[in-house]
Each structure stands twice: as C-alpha cells, then as structure tokens.
Length: 286
Image 1 (spheres, one colour):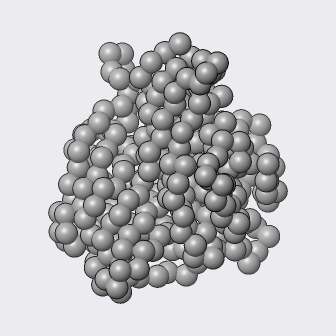
Image 2: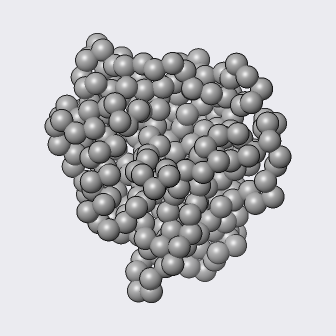
Image 3: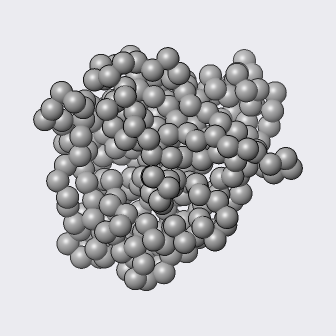
C-alpha cells in the first residue's frame, strides 16, 4: 500500500476515537449568511459545540475555496493553493463538513463538489467565512454531545487539524463514535478494525472529511496524483460473509491536478494522506 513519510514523529495512536451522543436534524441555511456563521448558529441552538454535516443542494455567491497543492516546503507533505472564487453563483452538488472549535471559537472543515455558472464542475476546500448563501442550502446534520472535534496542533503532520476531543457522555442517548484517522492507514480497513474492536456489527458513517494518497476505486479507476481532498458521500459498515465488519465508502474528491473523481473506494488501497474525520453511528452490535 502507498505511503508518505510525514515531517514529524509517527504518533503511536493511529486512530483517535471517543464515544458521544448523536442526534440527527435537518438544516436549512438562508440567503445572505456565511457558511461559518450559519452553521455556528445552528450548532449553538442545539446546545452543543460539534457536529457533522452532509451538503444536499443550494448555492453560494461568492463561493471561496482552496485547492489541494504540492508543498513548496519540507515542513509539510502537501499544502493548499492560493484562494479561488467561483465566477458567479455556484450550485452545490454534494459535500461534507466537520464542525468543531478552534481556540474556543467555531471552526469547520468542508470539502465539496459544485457547479459553476458555465456548467463546469469544481471541487475543493470551501473557505467558510467567505462563502455566502445565495439560495437556501440544505444539509443533513448530526449533532454531537459528550465528544467532538477541536482544532489542535499535530506534530506528525505539522498542521493544525480537527482532532477528537472527549467529554462526558450522558446515559440514554443514541451512541456514536467520533473518529479521526492519522496518515498511512487504509480508510476502510481502519474503520473495519475499529468496529470489530468495539463490537459494532452494522453502522453508518456520518460526515467524513479528509485526504487520501491518490485513490483506487472498486471499479478499477485510479487517481494517480497523490495530493487529494476527499469527502464521504455515503458510508456503511455491514457484516461480510465471515461476519466481520466490511466498509463500503463512496467519496467525492479533487486532486492537486484538478482532476475530480467520485465512486466507491477499493478496500485496502486508499491510505490517509494527512487526516480523516468522521462519525460512526452503530445500528447493530455483535
């Protein structure tokens, strides 16, 4: 399996995971608000500080974004491009968001695919404080209580990243697991191992934002450029023929070359580049 040597020491804990309560809600952001302010208001109104979201339509104008890029410095294995902006109203196709805190203030990590006024499909990392709703944006949301995400320094990658922040889980709620995967481990296999260890037989993946070292799809297609920005469109854990958990993960992504791809990941062939954040919601226990 492919791998990239990171600039810092390899952290012994490859998977961050903490139990939380989860609650599904539908969200609509209205014209004029920025993505950051709109979601901060929603999360605050539910009395929590962390959540994950799936984008399901609407538009932004402006839509400001970064592309994945090669790093010009040995301090990082990959980096961001300069700022771009859609030339007019951009219609959202799909995307995912991780929402948490940075220094006690709202922060979010969003990768998405959208359609620009000339019909061109684009993808990248949205700049939430500079992207403003043009027509109502619809999201599926999962509020998290008892654990969440917080931006903290990560010595292995030399980035400030969304990491798992554990708290106190209330009894009686619907249980979920807040997860962050560190580099150079296959996304599907890491999730399968985590579910097996926790006795999870069936589960859904909620949210999902991160990066992979190129991409190999189940149907044989590949993305060769190694710097990608990825989001999970849908993800499920189901028992395989031997009863062990098997992950089926459909993603959208853009590579630093500008190539956009979508499809189901091939298990065992898609290692994490920098990080991957998501939530696992169990439906059946072993």
